[in-house]
Image (cartoon, rainbow, N blue to C red):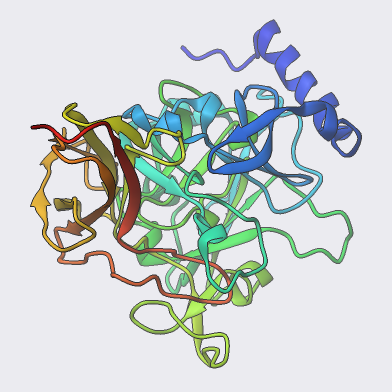
Amino acid sequence: MHEPKQSAQQAISRRALLASTAGMCVSALGARLAMAGPPYDDPVARFPEKTALRLLNDRAPQLETPWRYFKEDLTPNEAMFVRWHLQPIPTHVDLNTWTLRVGGHVNETLSLSMDDIRAMPAQEFVAVIQCSGNSRRYFAPRVPGGQWGDGAMANVRWKGVRLSDVLERAGMKSGAVQVTFNGLDTGPLPATPDFVKALDVDHAMQQEILLAYEMNGAELPLLNGFPMRLIVPGWYATYWVKCLSEITVTDTKFDGFWMAKAYHIPDNANASETPNDLAKNTVPINRFNTRSFWVHPSEKTGETEFANGATIPLEGVAFDGGSGIASVEYSLDGGGTWQEATLGDDMGGYAFRRWRAEWTPTTPGIYQLKVRATSNDGETQPVDAKWNHGGYMRNVIETVDVTITGQEDG
């Protein structure tokens, strides 16, 4: 039987977060521990329940995962990136009083405690969570917004209950159109639009949409949405509402700010536009595109120089919006020729797919290594990065320059 009361250690941790976050405008400098290292020259900060993460902003918190953690199949909870929109953020949640309210266009309004939810059939799977603005700092021309590197993503094992099970328990009335999701975060002023997101009913009822209360076998860190967050596999994290407290079924299309205006992309196949010709038609951002990355070698960890004749492990991760990764290819000559990498264990269509190869260079010099992935639905990465004014959905064949030192053999 799950006991909702927090342990003394948890209570102290939550209070520490309250004290830390409440004074963040003063304590941010004190939280800076060191420079983040290549290629980031930004400070890093340590928040409660978190290891040292790259600090983009402290009010509301934006913290990026250091690249070395992507050498692990699952991103540790303490290293997962943090992205909040509104300040103040929740700093304490008491499971003895917290409930998930389900209402609107339903037959029965629900108020579910964590014990109620844990008593329902649990589901568990691995899925990538990725910020819409991941890799925004590489857009050219630069665009406003949090200047994320590539670390605004994580590969996590989520556990919770299906949203569809909760909605069926409430009983949606005929004519239901969308389902909205609201968390415990609030804006600084009454006029600040509440952070509410929406899914169409058909999407909300899909079996993979989860109300998660655990990640990687433990409670969610408060900064990542304790006690519950919405999981929308294959879609950008703007929909993954944290500290979830209210679900509402509507019989009309929801027109709140965070759906009608924010997080919009050009309404075309690659979500692209140009600075001189902005798209006239836009739609809310939705499904991931296909991506692959170098984990080793990597400029992000400073591992780009090797001795001639040494066997160099090549490794990275790839993912897409849910069809799964069919293949990963790498090039050692700047894209002139391509070889197929070996794919690692399949953790599911929504998860990272690790890829590996080996290379033994025989000639010193500087080599441009590239990687591209192809999904099971045939999507791959473009040669040239597309641009949009929001800095969303960055995608391109990724490149790392490697230096091979030493004398040429023979």
